Image 1 (cartoon, helix red, strand yellow):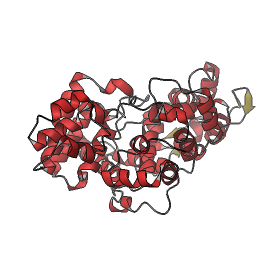
Image 2 (spheres, one colour; image 1 turned 60 degrees about the horizontal axis):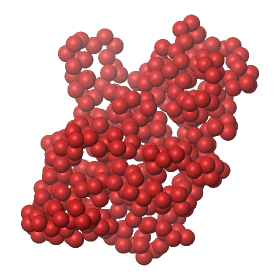
Image 3 (spheres, one colour; image 1 turned 180 degrees about the vertical axis):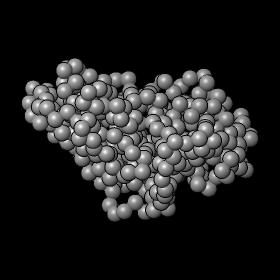
Length: 419
């Protein structure tokens, strides 16, 4: 098959380097798809970014902390969260298996969780990364300490049911809106009662006295459900693979146009293997037809720029990284910190005037770090893997003699920000 290899690399990963793009163009579209969704061997690049070791959460041993102890523990948590964010951004940059890393980013937004504990967030990250397929992932998430805590599992008890986790399992994570009733949610919430998070334990703690042992009827099936049999029931629904296919289309192909029914059904047939579903998507002409419609998310834009400029987060001075890290927050997308359980937005939501100013400042900082001496618009296009400048952009770039400014303008150009 034929297709735009550059588009494929931009969407499947975080943005190719010039060398990666040249190699892929020589290899061809079909082989590049296979290399992305079925990489051979270990991720050599990622071995240069070992996962951090944190120790216990700062609050784990503080049963009745003083105000001073609470303040210190919160400060330690902020440092640890920045530390794991720096590590993850660095891994995105150096990972050889770009599609694997990009998929990890997708799942982190899908199971959107935001907590102050780096230990809980990193535990969830490991669980997502280690999942064999979506079914395995759903089983891991229903027992994930971060997700359970984020969605009020602490308060879900037999005599005081809390429906948050059950509701989001149905609505945002597995089935989608309209595939269940309020009674299904209430019954599922009963299934999830009695589990809580203890910071110095690696797994959820089960309190039998707070668990509802009664039989439940969910989606027309009556049984003695537990969290795992509930997941088994949900992932067997016809709506589940279609919902996941639709979510992938939304993030990889188009956030404005609905997924064609033919593509959705073909992707659903490859469920529960996420990479197999992506292969179906990438090999369909409908994917190529979405060229020029996707706005890069801030993390995609930032990591892609780092890769193409040869920069790594772990090699930046701490004060420089911290400025860039909080600039990502200003853009609305800091790692491990989605704005809500619905995850990060997509599309033109990222193209605000406020975001443009922040991105311009970030681009200038990145250009200062590489300190180019001489550069032409063609050089910038080559480094950033931009196919071609529009006449309007080129008219601006060709008159600029300052190499740093030229590179800065390239990073914030429409041709670079939209794939």
